[in-house]
Structure formats: structure tokens, C-alpha cells
Image 1: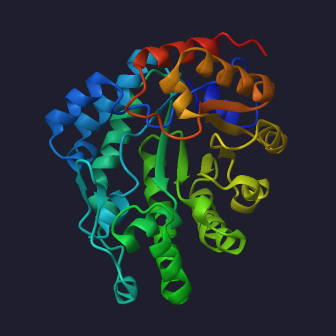
Image 2: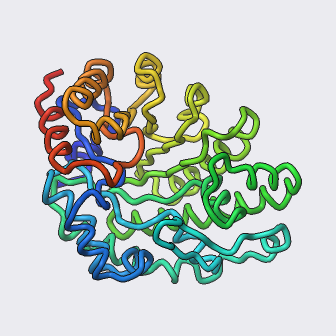
Length: 344
């Protein structure tokens, strides 16, 4: 089966499919008992990401359960700073941590050896494409430069990313160098994923929502544009989904400004605004993950509202952010059944 016959690839070409294809961000994760079992076997979280046997297994688990229209590579956005030798580690209960970088550290950064370091990821992608059902789209991904930079500067996640914002104001030259370096190595990373078998890729800008208008343009839009230009110059048929969480009204020009084929929407985006964005091309989203935790009427009503507002245009049904560990797997079954019963 060719890429263009896979439902999500058809939507990324601008076609409307009814019912819309669906997948869920973090669909392989802690809400599934089989994931937790594999995670225990793997040892550390990075071992899970870098061991193809385990990464393939956890990527396939939600496909076996729910027959989603896409599988997304199991990995993490912080494998790039890990490849940059920033001593990334994941501590249970504390989230990701790494050695924070300063202005001098940025000037001495080199991308030498990063792609070699990430070879196990490409092996995982190749194995997945061979093992997935022919009709299932395989998505690769990476973090956007701004979001990855926030972790590199603070050394951990922070609620409002004040360390990165302050650093950018005080050290603009070094900060832009970091964003450019991350954009270039991340683009190479995506190209290698595509060459290994990914049908399309998603760029996650999880912290775009903390930026003001000018900073959004400088730190979120331009680096992602640089990435997408590089990817499409190397692989003209590549399809890219860009997800700028919390960007709100600034999504109005985000698709055109970045060159993305589809834009992901978080749950705070009004469906009337989402419908306007959909007139210009495919959208992805945007059910509140807490509705999946709640289940019942709350979930059904949320799904129905999205399908009624966006189901008559090019839509990839998804959540507005990742599924949470508290979600009941049976609620996900109900979600899949409801979306697939939609008749546009």
C-alpha cells in the first residue's frame, strides 16, 4: 500500500475523510498495563527509547489494542540534547533533568556524533515500518528548538520557562545560535527518520504558549520554518505536522509562516477558530485529555463537538495534548468507537 492510500497521509494531502482518521499523542504510555510491564523490563527510560526491541514493542501496543490509523515512534524529544552530551537523565517523580548550559557552553556546542548516537532510533523506525499493518501511517517526531532549548538552559522543566526567556533576553546572540543549531540537527534527525521508513513527522513545540508575539515569531516560528525548509529541500514529498501548544491566536499565521502541512491544536483552541484554520488546510486535535479520564458524557460530548465542527474538512482526530496515566483504557476504546461511527 502506498503512502497516499494511508488515511492520515491522504488528510495531510488536504483530503477530507469520513470518519476522520485518528491517533492519540502519548498513545503508548503509562495508562496501558502492557507498557508498564515493558518499561520495567527495559530498566531506565532512556534504555527503553534506545533499545529497538523495547521501543518497537511499546509503539505497537496501542496499535494492537485500538487499531489507530497512525503509530508514532516511541522516543523522547530530549534524545537530541542527550546526543549533544548534556547528561540527560530521567528520575522517577522528578521528570527529565540534564546539565544546564550557559552562554559559553552554547558557543562550544558541536553536533558531531549526534546522528551516530541516534542510530538505534532509526533502527526502531525501520523495524516498525516492516511490522506495522500496511494501512497504518508511521509518524516520526522531534521537539521544536524552542522547547528543547528551554530544558537545556534550565536543566529541567519549569512552568513558565522563565530561565530560557531571561537567558534569551540577556544573551540574544548565543540563544539564537542554540536555536539554529537545534533546528539544523533536528532537521537531519527527521530526514533520517523519513529515510528509515517514517511516512510523516511531527514537530512538538510544547512550550510555545509562554511566548509573547515577537518572541513567538523569533523563537517558535523561524526555527521551525528553518527545519521544515531543510527537510523539504532534502525530501520534497515529506509531510510535516507542527504542534505549537498554547499558541492560541498566533496559530492564525503559523501554518503559512512555518510551511507545515498540518497544524496540531490544543484543547484551548475554540472550535470556531479551529474551523477557520481548517479552511487553509488540515488540522489535528483537539480533545481535552481530561475528558478521556472522565469518560462518559463528558468524553462523548467533547468528541461530538469536535466532529461536528471539524469533521467535514481535513481532520486528524487527536487529543489536545498527550493522554495521561490516569486514563482508563476502556475509555479509549469508547473514544475510538465513537469517532469511527461518525458519518460526515
